Length: 288
Ligand code: DGL
Image (cartoon, rainbow, N blue to C red; front, side, top):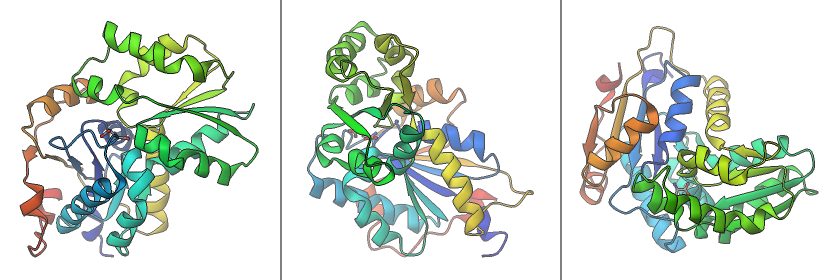
């Protein structure tokens, strides 16, 4: 891969605003890397949809990102990683694919000396058992306690990050998991780190670590870029572009609050027509 080829962006995708938690970690860990973020804001939430629908949406997003010449794909959505990883990897061909479940599972195992891990996520992620499988592949002796939290995603998308309704909802959802004397709680949905301060209060115990896979994902991305020779060179200037499927306003408002920086390059796309059937649209110059 040529040096200029290495300036191609990393494609990061999620069903909505939640994947920005991964973008923030990538910006901090890999400041030379450009990012093309895709948030499927018109079709969020994914976490209550069928596997077939999620696979179909994921395939469309991957095609879109590949047409925009990304050099690596990061599945910044636990739900897509839980049920569509095979489809995504198959479509990606030789483009490396990383996902937040692998990162979250690794981070949880190393942060849980007592071997008791709580996992919260969307109903689709929890029903898929993907976290328990990945955690047990790393350490079969760990006990995993899971809880689906279907209302968290709409609350985050609504911007209710510190709201009495969110707090009551969290208390209700966390009750049974917290009764299990867990060492760590995996925030198994990329929307949940936006609720971290509130969840920290609700958990109310300093010894329970909240695991947010964003930082580990960024770390794994750094390793993989070096291994594959795809890391941006030291003269690169990172650029960030955000693509959403609904009007950008809400994404922009919540995203700016969360990222602590203005989100300027937010565009709306029509995924049905932009990714299918057209020849790849190379936009490398956007990222130099
Ligand atoms: N952010 C996604 C995840 O990590 C799911 C949100 C949704 O339901 O679309 O699971």
